[in-house]
Length: 211
Image (tube, rainbow, N blue to C red; front, side, top):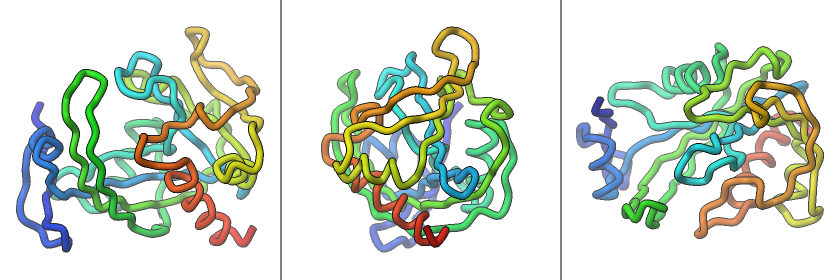
């Protein structure tokens, strides 16, 4: 099924809609949303990408994220992505900031990929146990909980590892485990640093939380 996205010029002026594949082939400007879930006021959740994915398998990434579909508002996109990827419902997200994102690279299958994005960063509180989440099995192997300050220290290069609570299906069924994470466990494109990709977001969350 073809997925259509709203497209824009580099100033943010809406130009119309286009097939998602064409958007990335041509490098057309579009919008995405990144949804970060904060647990117990001090911890942050990362999704663990499926080991079956061609690109960045088993890497940790934003709690939930995706493209805004044609005609969708940011609030609609937040609720949809959280529901689709994590199987839960969350309302009243808080926008942190918008990032202008531009990159070009070749995917593992050899396909050129051109990304021109207005990326909207949101956060929301959710204190439910990890076992009440229902990760999307086609895309995810589970979710991982870490302390925000420790994760930030890792991304800054101040420490080499951090502890994590994981709700994953690594053994074929979901279970809670504790693991030690390192920098290379987190998805990061060649043109970025982990601090640029995650650290500044965590700093903004800590500021909101007055931590």
